[in-house]
Image 1 (spheres, protein in one colour):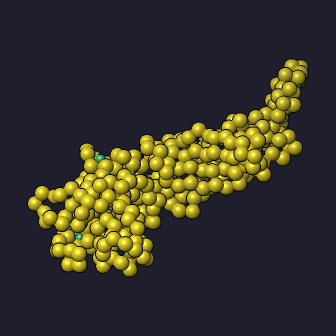
Image 2 (cartoon, rainbow, N blue to C red):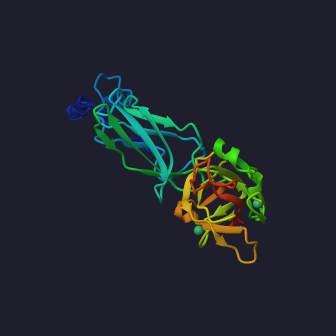
Image 3 (cartoon, rainbow, N blue to C red):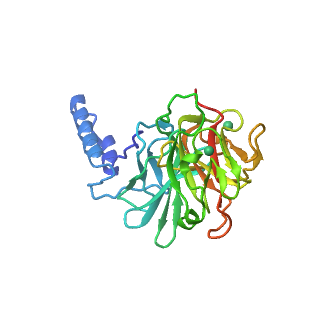
Length: 325
Ligand SMILES: [Ca+2]
Ligand SMILES: [Ca+2]
């Protein structure tokens, strides 16, 4: 962390040229050392001298410093408060985004601290991408100021080395209760392994899970998808062409970063059964270099009750196209 230059109290600086050249050199050195010690000891964020710190006109990012690679998923973020936006005067909102795309990773609002404001996000942040952070501060009268931004990285994603490109485990599953009651294909494990959907509708299909209105299944690929040439992830979606939203993460609990919203997912797959359709996604769109977990979310957004017993996108399989070696 770069140290902020300390300022000398004006009265200490004024004393420096007043030291008589007739004093022995050793004595002059001792006096200068004494002045420096007093000056350094009386400065800092917790100013005990009775002279208030002069805060900068905009918030200044202190840590993590730009370009840092951290060894923790939950770093402390510290900003030096802006003048007029200090303790009791303002709230600070901390923003963490993917640096290249500005897609949101996390945000948190806290009251200003004294001279500096710090937060630690309650959940881990995102691995596998260069992140950016910044703050905005707002007073009760809606005056606002913003910092610049700084980039940082977390440790690499924890990937399992594998040749198998398909989803291994369902790490999470949520479908609105009213859709679960209506749908008859409600097993999230049907999204694991290679595509195998088939059968005849409406009640003799097999091999997929229906997501209802905006529901999702989170899958652990164990291996990692990397942002290679072209598209990096394929979702197999059965029955028709319901749109799919894809989010990515480095942990099973998020944060989930949007890859693509409501992509139509009805392309037929040459050589596969007529029920098997697909759509593909590029991690480049999210600015993510590698990801192990994907949230596959219904993008049809058709309300339940109503519709069919396969309401929402019908997820058969998830495949990594660019698998980390
Ligand atoms: Ca790519
Ligand atoms: Ca399946």
